[in-house]
Amino acid sequence: MAEEPGPSTTRYRKLTEAQITSISGAVSGFTATVAKQPVQRLKWIRQVDAGPAVPYNQVLQRQLAADGFFGLFRGSTAAIARNVPHSALVYSFFPFFERLVAQQLATPGGEPPKGSFATRFWAGYATLFAATLFTHPLDTLRVRISVTQGEARVVDVASKMYAQGGIRALYGGFGATLVGAGPRGAIGFGVFETLKQSGKDAELVRRHPASAKFIFGYLAGFLAEFFIYPLDTVRRRQQALGDSTPLNRMNPVRALGKLFAQEGIVGAYKGLSLNLIKNPMGTAVSFAVNDLVKDRLTRRQKDR
Image 1 (cartoon, rainbow, N blue to C red):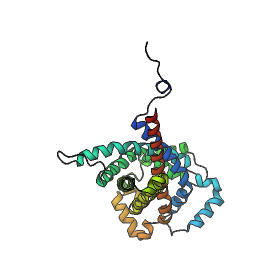
Image 2 (image 1 turned 90 degrees about the vertical axis):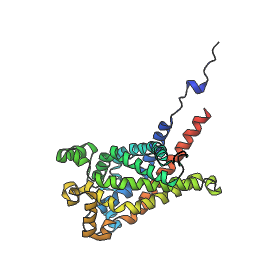
Image 3 (image 1 turned 180 degrees about the vertical axis):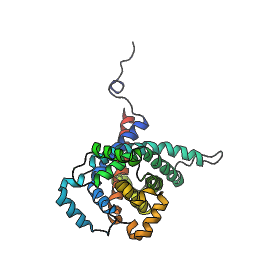
Image 4 (image 1 turned 135 degrees about the horizontal axis):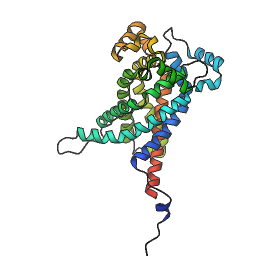
């Protein structure tokens, strides 16, 4: 007589690696988005203003007076709609590109250097580059909504942008995004994965894995943010202002040169102080939550 299938075969279906990374990436994207959205909106409003830099407390007071506390979360729906699939793609793509890059860097007859910094660096570069190709229109929508005064629905903003400039309008700042996305992913994944691997045997890391992952993620995000920020300023101007800014009609390198010529380092790094708190924190939450959820799902698969 055939053996009756046990509970593990009738109630559960084992998840693939791609499914696990998609779930962990989606959860991390949602968590990081909600955590940083109020600060994100204040930073963008200040960043896209081409005039003299306004102190953050004045920007905050102005927004609270105009839209109230919940107005600080404007753009959250669009941000979640963009960040959740983006994060799911990023954490699903990285293992694939890590294996691919390791094979390309392998010496003849040698083992692929999967655990090297160079492998993680270039895999992170390819990962963010590829994910951005799919999610940039959603990023443009969330920026446009976040800097809009008053109520703004995703459908209305998308329809208006498409009517004014077609699909090109949804890809405003795309060149600057691609130029910045690769290095951001390279530095982020390279630093985080290397720190995680180097510190895995440390007593403090074993006792407090969540805190350690958060700290490693913050350091990775801090370094990536500092080096890529001027390109981010160009991108946000192009996304938020469209054809009303001359930067929108320039390639990323020329636009960056124009920004430095007109506003100097201060203009290119406008909003950096807040960003060095917000974005590394978002990166830390994203890396830590993704790893914790992925580890939990992987352990559950092994227990079944």
